[in-house]
Length: 325
Image 1 (cartoon, rainbow, N blue to C red):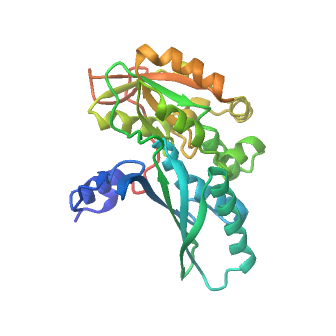
Image 2 (image 1 turned 60 degrees about the horizontal axis):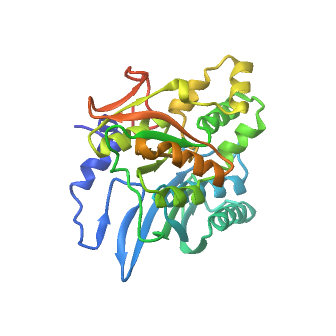
């Protein structure tokens, strides 16, 4: 009998999506960063994320405030990926009965701080007893800005794959945690990611930006979702990827390859988008006049093949998959 490990996380999602009914008020359902639905006269963005002890975090390496922050940021980043504005958050918590109240209050403080940074508020949730591990389920509700949103679908042949900020820092921070290495900036990037809320809304309003996703599972894998949305191929140019100075230093000190972190490391929550080539230069200039972070073209979409390549070659590894072997 086949198991979820045999088909992987995204194979499971595709299989389950075929079993689910839909509605005329659902504009985008299973398979994107958020569901896009009609609520009266409003177009709402709705998503949720699970955050599990021993899978997403360990209490031994993060404060409760860090854990709460990251759980909220991961969910809220889905709204940023669609170019929307977060509004409300619901949090369900399962924990053992002997969990210290101060720990739960710390979780709440971290959740509240991350939601507040995004312009959202926590409005409810649920609690239950867990036999062993702590489980957080964070649901977010947002709205479109100006009635427009960006999906994973929409990329066109010739579009430029552009990425905000620097990728690979969170994965390097996790590496530092696991190996007892120093690296304050990388540890902060891993424990307290900063989703690109304002940048996502700005990109959504620009003509020629055709599709967008947040980088939660690694650049190769998430860029692949953009290509897959339109049955396209994607070639990432590793020479265009600019590593953060702290990532470069860390890899030099420990004999590591920064490119591996940048291509396959997840949980950066930067944005990757498809931009029409005729507006790419102007978009980059305007973006960098507006924000302190970079917008860098690192690849191109093509209809010559399907799937992701790096410098024209099949990548040795993709990104994170919960059920992969």
